[in-house]
Image (cartoon, rainbow, N blue to C red; front, side):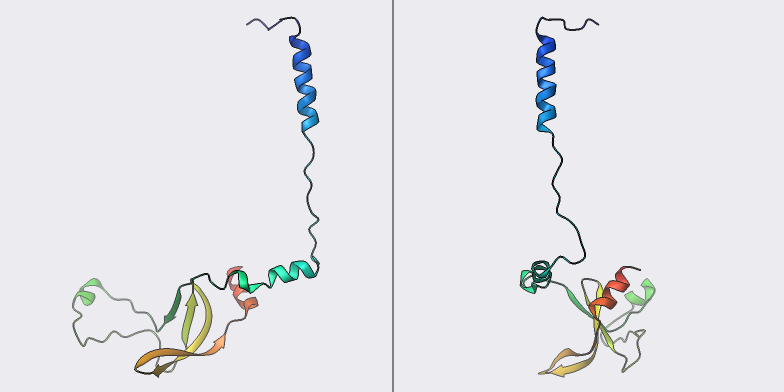
Length: 130
C-alpha cells in the first residue's frame, strides 16, 4: 500500500497533531475529604429534596408456606396459620428494608399499626452492608 506523499501533507499532519495536543488538558477535580464543611452538611441534611418521593410501605403480619392443593382448597372462613405468634411485634418494611416494628391497633373499624421500635439509620446501613 502506498503512503500519501502529496506535497504539504506532512505539514498538515504535524499541524493537526500539534493542535490536538494543545486541546488536550488534564481535568480539574475537587478535593475529596471527610470534612467537607457546613455547606456539604446542609446539602446532606436537606430532607426537603426527598419528602415527596413515594415509597411502598408494607406491614408484615407473618408468612406461611403451603402446597398448591391446600391453597386451592381454601374457602370462605378458612384459616391460614402464620409463622408469628399472637402478640409478637409486626414489621414495617419500606421498599424492602425493615424500618420499624409495632403492634396492631384498630381505629374507626380500620386496622393500623402503632410503632414501638424504629430502626436507626446506622442499623439500616449495617444491614445493607452485610
